[in-house]
Structures are given as C-alpha cells and as structure tokens.
Amino acid sequence: MKQSYLLFYFSKLSIFAMCICFVALFARFFVPVEFLSENLPYYIVMFYVFTALCYVFLYKNRKTNFVPTFMITKILKFIVYLFVLVIIFLLDIETNVKFAVSYCVIFFLFLIFDTITINQLSKRQVEEEKQLKNKEQNEE
Image (tube, rainbow, N blue to C red; front, side):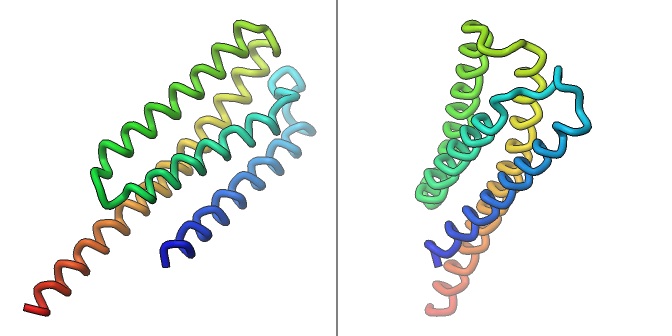
C-alpha cells in the first residue's frame, strides 16, 4: 500500500508537470515573448524534482512529528527557490521580467499542487490513526 500511494503521487505530479509544459508550450503562441522565459522547461524540472523529494521525505516521516517535518521541508524548499531566484538575478542570466513572470507563475502552480497533495497526505494520516485506535479498542 505504501509504495502504491507513492506511485500514485508521482503519477499525479508527472501529469501535473506535463500539463504545465503543455500550457507553457501553448502560451508561446498567445503571450508576448517578453513575458516567457526560454529556460521555462528547466524551471519546471527543478520544481518537479524538489516537490517530489520533499513529498517523499514527508511521506517517510509522516508517523513522527508531521507538522515540524512539514514546516522544515516548506522552509527549505522556499530557501532553495529563493536562492535560485537571487542567483538568476545576480548573474543576469535572463531579463528580469521574463524570469520573474515565468518563475512566479510556476512557483504558485506548484505551491497550489503541493498544498493540495500534502493536505491529502495529512488527512490520510489522520484516518490511519483513527483506524488504528478503533482496531485497538475493538481488540480490548
């Protein structure tokens, strides 16, 4: 069951990332070039990898101190994203408008996805704890 839930999560994450890629592809036809980064696929991959790693870490540590683990992963992810943002701005790799718009849109999309899936994980944990308590009470 544990592995299948992780597989289910990675399937949802992959489909979500592919949808973002298709939206970005079609956005090239409708959004002015000044607002879309050429490096958009790399940013999507970065957000995908960090979202997946944090979710696996949270899933493995869901039984012990879920809330502090959740907060630590959120803070570390935000620091990494902020670090990348600052590096791109300081090294002047892209124009600020292109990068800022693309990066912020992807950030918020993955943030919404991450929040929804983490909420599902926490609900699942609460249900498992209730079932365990009910099972223990029935055995007594």
